Structures are given as C-alpha cells and as structure tokens.
Length: 354
Image (cartoon, rainbow, N blue to C red; front, side):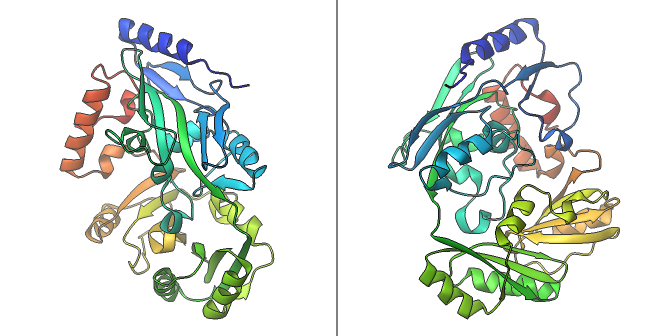
C-alpha cells in the first residue's frame, strides 16, 4: 500500500514558513554529490512518501508518489511487459522518481524517445503556504492549462516538494540488439548523426574508447534490416553494457578523476579540454562526459562559443545552476521562483539568480 504522508509534508512546510526557516528537500540522497551543501536548513525527507497509487496498463500511464523507488516502478511495469517511456538514470538502487524528475537528467534514449519532462502527464506539489497544487492530469489527452508539471523537471526542489507524478509508459520492445563499430571520435559523431536521420529503430548511441555502440529496439524484422544497414558487429552483453551506462557503473564513471557534463549541439566535433583525461559521448553527440582534473576559463568560453555549456558532475565543487544561464534565463527563472516560492523557502542554496 502507498505510504501517503502528504498532510505531514504540508504541515512541515507551514511550520517552516511561520518560522522563516528554509527547507532542504531530499529523498534517497542519490544525487547529493551534484548539489551544494544546504546551510542552516531543515530537512524535508520525501523518502517515506512512496508507493504506486494508480497504474493503467491499457492507458499506458502510471502515477506514483515522489519517494517511490524507480526500481519498484520498473518491476511493476515489467509484469505487464511495459517500461518507462525513456531512460531514467538511477545512480543507486534507492533512486526515487521525485529525485529523477527534480534533477531532470535523461539517459541515452533522450535523442530518440525524448527527455523525462516530455513524458510527464501530471504532477502535484506543495506551495510555500503548505497548500497542495495539482497540474496536468492522468491521461495523455489532458492538455488544459499551463504545463507546469513538465516545468518541474530539473527544478531541483526549488519550486516546492513534489508529491506525486504521472508518467507515460510504453510496451517493452520485442527485441533489443547492440552493434559495435571501431571508429575515431569525429567519424563516430558523423555516423551517429547520419543514422539518426534515417528510419531505423535506434534507441541509443554511445562512443567510448574508439568504439561506437548502437542500441536497436523493435521487432525482429526491423532489427535484422537495421543490422544490415548499419553493418556493425553484434555485442553479446549489450543489456549489461547499457545498464552500466544508465547506472554509471561503467569503468569510465568509476574513475577517481573529476567528471564534467558537457552539453553541445550534436554535430560538434570532438572536444579537447586543457586537462582532459578521457571522454564518453552520449545523446547522439549532444552529451559529452569528460574526465578532467579541472576546467579552465578558456574551456568554458570555447564550449559557450559552440552553443553549449559545461557543469561539474562528480569529484569537484558543484556548480550553481545560475552559472549555466544567460541573463535572460536567470530573469525568467527568478520570476518563476518568485511566483511559486516568494518566501524563498525551498532549497534556497540552489536558486540564487543574482
């Protein structure tokens, strides 16, 4: 049975507002390494607010409380031969739905199936007065009102604690296959982008250590035809490989080197940061993971000139989201924050847009 402690959460928010004491919202702490420390904040623990409250296999939707473990959702969907509609990164077995939505990162399927926010149908959260606000709905046809439910993706708790989320789900594909190709970096980027423009059942592509990995998902006939078109070498343990990427258990992610997350236009040629040790390319070229002891000002400016940005991910001091924004973006975020949280109650350390 779901453990719905919504009223308890609302009461804690009301008390925090009355005492003018900011709240640090967290779940399983699986993303803490990405976030700055919260000084002088009360802890609002969402981890016990868990459970699936509605699942409609025929409607391809599931609604769960924010503290529900991603693993539980995946297991429940698998019983009906279904799964979430895109890749949800899970950096620990305790990773929660609310944490994944709040961080807003999407796994390798993003260029092909869309970002996490694209699959959110509805959500509810608590405002600064301790009131529950509902947005969106529980069916795909519900498009009335402002699309605030998708806006919550990537807000990192700065607009308030998310109580529940409704997601689209999809059938598990008939088959999955992984092909490998030995290439240099720029050739791999070119091929990833060229294949993405073709009608092929590709659901992920990653380049690492001079090898391009391409995941195919679909019918047996569709995959066989795609294999002939791509002409790569089949990989025996493809499922394990993709799990290691999504869960960041691959050797690349377990290095002691600081890890940086770089977003650039997908066709951008290979990047060479001043202190770069190794890199892994995801998102059909749009996401570059880079191991580097530090990042220079020249690196940051070079990436900006290419239309992208870089942020610290693991092993170095977390960067403020505002550091990644243009002046216009900061102004927009500040207005949204003011509308939802005029008291600066929720995760204030993450919402300094000055």
